[in-house]
Amino acid sequence: MEKRMISALLALVMLVGMLSTTVFAADVTASGTCGDNTTWTLESDGTLTISGTGDMRWSSWGSAPWADYADSIKKVVIEDGVTNIGGFAFSYCKNLSSVSIGSTVTRISWQSFQNCTALKEIVIPRSNVIRFVSTFCAVSAIVFSTPHSLIKFPNIRNPTRDTDD
Image (cartoon, rainbow, N blue to C red; front, side):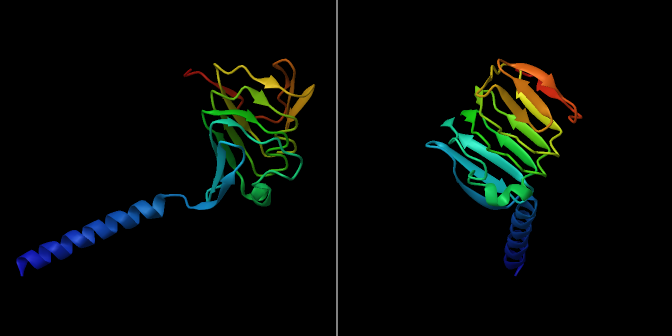
């Protein structure tokens, strides 16, 4: 009898432990590919993560594979290994407020963040040397001019550069 009680108690503890882990994990809303070796995942908390190696596919306006979820995207994380941000990739993601760019990104393509009106923060590792593909690359209210010179930051509240690298 005592062994059964202990076994039942252990099973209950394991079940509660599994449930609490599941409750705090963000659910995947959608996912797919966005290049030959790059993938995307959108979590229920609005985080869009681009991972893998190499280039994101060049996009035209509205053709990014996550375009149907643009209003749900609040944060973009581009992981190390990805080498460019495709053209129009995050355009019109009106609720996008934060972008973290991995240390291997060397190119930001045409209008990658056009009309992202809620964008407040872009974090770029200090080691990055980024080439902008167009004469002007509008990043919501941030405007960059090639090569690598920041023109203005009018609506950005927390412009930061990662200082850990």
